[in-house]
Image (tube, rainbow, N blue to C red; front, side, top):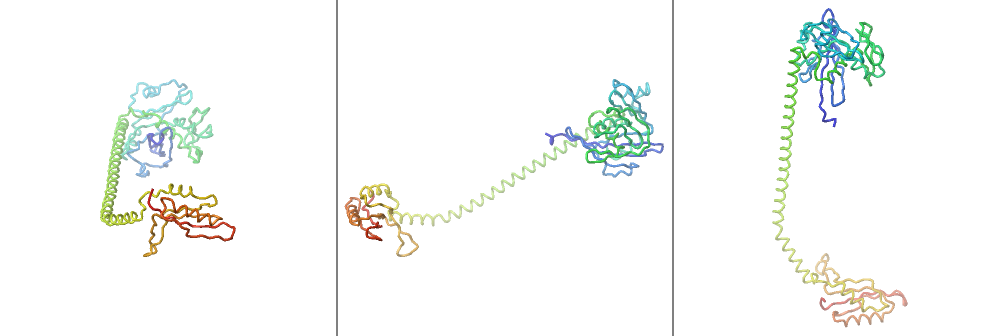
Length: 402
């Protein structure tokens, strides 16, 4: 997962030397996360003192590229040459101590490009940069590391002018480096136009991000800075992890405390609610008993035997009488208060239709003689025409439950 990939950032600084000292300074910030490498152009300066202080950071190691006066560059027509510092240096100066020179080399196609620079000529400059509170973990020299960046240039031309050298390529291989004061142009990479003078520095940056051991680490001061940065970054990482862990623990404790506080508040509300409920319990229990007595007296708590009554009534109903409704224990308004509803226990209302009033009265008489019927009578009778259907309501008072 890309968001878990380790991010590594470096600050690349090119020091272009002339007879008068540092002629030009270019700076690029590079960042690598997983397989993705990005860069930002920091700027171009004439002197170290012109660089804003916020540009330097102890957490970001500095990689130097030294070009110009004092740098000796050669091309070896073989890619079999060892890139070891001693082998490269002895190809220039046999029997020379490596800690006196900065040595950097890289392959480009079937050739090997190498450059050397006496360390004493740039020691004061490197010490000045180290005094900014940063670690210098590598020192390159020469323009030939531009070949590390050249493949990433869209539609790259075969000739590049950096403002001080002319770089010639054939089949993506760096073949020549010549001095040239031709003005450098801009080349678009993505949506950004980049001055060609930054390309050698970008090549060093790509090489530095891809390799653990950088040129110049054989020099004691650079080696010390490299080790110091290693432990600084490790302890800084551990410190960040510790702070994050402490923050997470505090956050978890806060969430737990907040949750417990909320639960305590809920329980307190529950206790208060229960106390109010207990305070009303006696009143509610008294009301319940009153209602229970009312329903008991009304006979509504006993089984109404609705199905049994319906079967008994249906079994006695003549063919010419059709039943449309059956109301067991109908309710009526209390005479004392109109809003009170009083159930009429033991009362059954039968609604229906018939064309024969004689048969209706005969059926009511039959019901009256049933063992479970106290009395039965016709309450309502309505017939709109002489030969039409009549609607009726029969009231049946039961003796007792089955």
